[in-house]
Image (cartoon, rainbow, N blue to C red; front, top):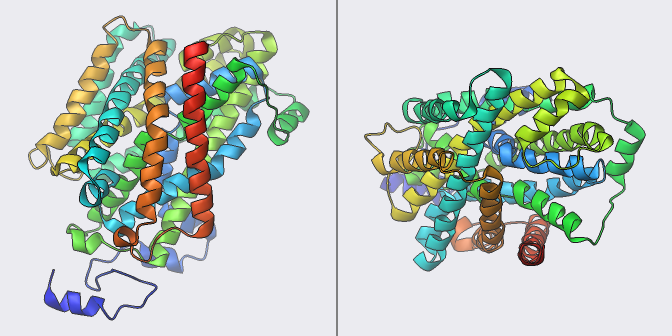
Length: 454
C-alpha cells in the first residue's frame, strides 16, 4: 500500500472507516445516487443479493416447497413470511463481511481463526453442495424431458457440459447477466399459482394465521423449509460474490477492497432484501400453486419438483405443468453453478489459492478444478442408480447440521472489531442473527430426532 495512502487513511471521517482514498470508485454509485426514480435505483444496485436469493429456490428447494403445499395445502404459507427476516439478516451479514474485509467468508476465517474451525465447515459444504448439484442436474434433465421427448438420462451430460462451459469460458460480468435473466424464470411459479385459481379467503388465512401441529411429519416439514431456505452454501457465495463485484470495478488489491462506506452498505442491504423477498415470494407461490391443485385433489404424496410438475398436468392442465417445468430448468441452471462455485470459493480461500470467475482458468487452475470436479461428480451421481430423493435427504442433513456452527462463526466474525472495524452489527441485526442461529440449532436437533425416530 502506498505510504501516502496509509497516511491519508488516518484522516478519513469516522463514518467511512478503513477506506483508502485512492481506491477505484464504483462507476454506478454516482448514477444510483442521482437517479430520482426509486425503482430504477433499486434495479441499478441489484447484483449478488438477487442472484443469491434466486439460487435459494433451486430444484431441491422447489421440491420441498411443493411437498409442503401438496401435503398441507395453505397451512404453511405463513412460514415464508416468518423466514424472510431471518434469511435477510443472515445474508446481509455475510454481504457485510465480504464488503468490509475484502475477502470471502472462508478467507476471513482463514485469516483470523484457527484452521480447525475452517476446514470442517468447508469440507462439509463441499460434500453437501456436490450431492445437491448432482440432484439438481438430474432435475434439470427430467424437466427438459417433460418439454421434449428426449430421455432424461441422455440429457444429463450435455446439461453438465453446458453449465461448465458458462463458468469456465464466461466472464464474471457475463455470468452475472445470465444469472439475472435465469432468475426471471422463477416467475413462472407465480403464473402457475394464478392459473390454479385458489380460494383466496383460505390463502389469506393460511398466510396470516400460523398453524402448528406436534406430529413428527409436520415438524419435519417445518425443519425442511427452514433448512432449504437458510443454506450454508449461500453464506459463502454471498460474501465471495461481493468480493467479485469489487474486483470487477477495479478494486483488485486487498487494501482497495477493505472497508465499506455507509452508502455501499445501504446498497448491499437493498440488494440483499430484494433478493430475499424475491426468493420467499417464489417459495410462497410454489406452496400456493401445489396447495390449490395437488392438495385440493388428494395428490399429497409428492417426492420432488419434477413429480409435482408431472402431477399438475391432469389436475391444472398443461399450461401450469409447462410453467413449473420452465421454472425448474431456469432454477437448476442458476443453482448448479452457484453450488459448485461456492464450493470452489470456499476451498480456494481456505488454502490460499487464486480464485474468481473474473480470472481465466490458467490464472486460477485450482479454483476451476474444484468447479469441474464437483460438477462431474454431481453428474456421475445420476448414473450410479442413487435415488435423487435419497441424495437430497443426505444433502439436507449435512446442511442442517452444518448451518448452526457456521452461523455461530458468522455472528462472531461480524461482531469482531479486529475484523470489521466500526462495521460490526447493530442491536437489531444481532438480535435477528442470533435468533436465527438458535432456531437453526433447534431445527438441527429436530432433524436428528425425526431422522432417528421417523
